[in-house]
Length: 96
Image (cartoon, rainbow, N blue to C red; front, side, top):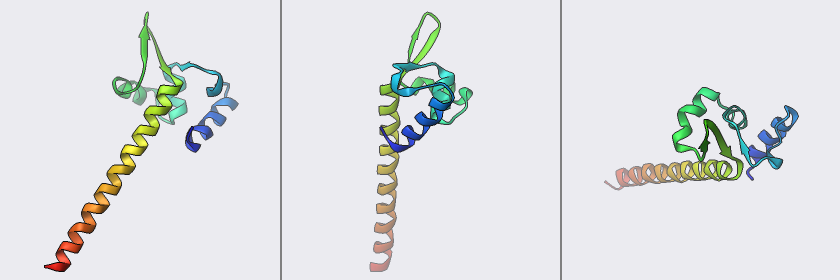
């Protein structure tokens, strides 16, 4: 579990939500864990791992944590790629 998620888990635990003992979160709890509004979470719901049964939406904790880690890695990889492209352009400009 990443340190950011652990920090959120600690703050949620103090508000009564213990991620360590939960299999899934309701949208309001997941939004709080992610530090976003419930409205924003519901906008993002199609891309988040979730289960919808009998009108109840649940976001499984472990898949949600993996999704968040994957998003962070993808963002980091893209940032590294952009920096590489910029450096290549700068080096190319200097060689001209």
